[in-house]
Length: 392
Image (tube, rainbow, N blue to C red; front, side, top):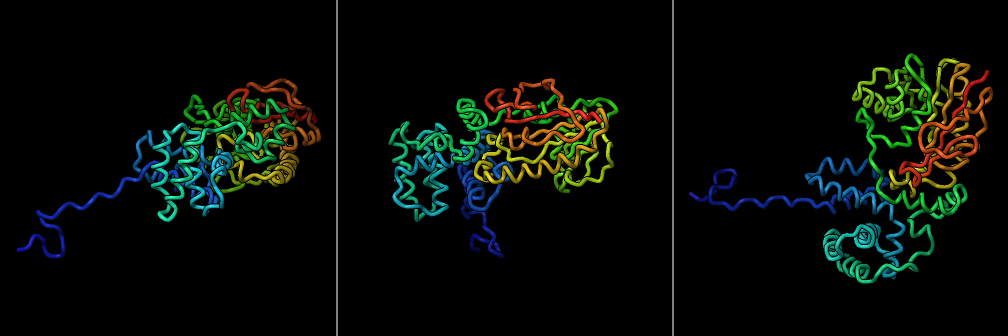
């Protein structure tokens, strides 16, 4: 007999089949970056999904997250670092590989020899020599202050974002905030285990609800503020426009045991509610998200300056729709995770309402007739909150 059974199955003397190669953290990170840069995927969605499919250790998972978020945040700065050594534009996929390498060498503190060799291994074979040559030059030439064309390039921000921050906050606060948003976001966990930025917790706390109160959270997904208010004994109608997003609210409320949260699909610009139906209304409105750029690393490359005005128009429509739903004596709380006046204090005070002047709980700074926190002030996202009381 030969050494094989019928059907081609290996016999006892056959050599073992080679094991499938183990995918590295950098390979997973590159796959995420390719999807983000060339397919429009969101970093905060694609990265957990790719990690879920991987067999990486916890340490390597953290490394992947840093590579994906860091390279995405610092995309413009990486291009400036690489630009010293490029005489022509590389293919899009190769550009992404180069950015990944430049981030490791120039910004992440990875040992240059390890960053270069491991990144070259990820490059398309036809471009591996080119990638090797460029990254070796990046590693060999020290970073210099005169590398940057200006603060926007150094901070890896669009020009308009830096300009808008400086107009809104002054240069010192603007640069300090933008520096902070290039750092990994801190993780803040509530007493019930829900992970939520502390600034968002302060917005929920600005709604003066208690046991027996009926509250409308008009843009509730994913449900952090709704569950926080329900924990104080209120019954919270948690509305959102998209059924999928309402499903997130329901899942979070169920996980936390928040029986006082009632998820509903409803449009904040044209809801089904009768006038004066609620003791309090929270409108945590869709916005440009300019205060959350550390948490949403690709947002700086998605949002445009024209989006600010478009969103401000939508916010005014929402305010006009939900304000009449507050009972006389009740409170309307308006919040946005941005820092610009156009999306907050420039909105007219709703008819029949007066501004509540007391400072809300949290590290807020007065901002017109509202309150604002900047990212560098308390290590939170940048936010604005305004409280109104219905006087008639």
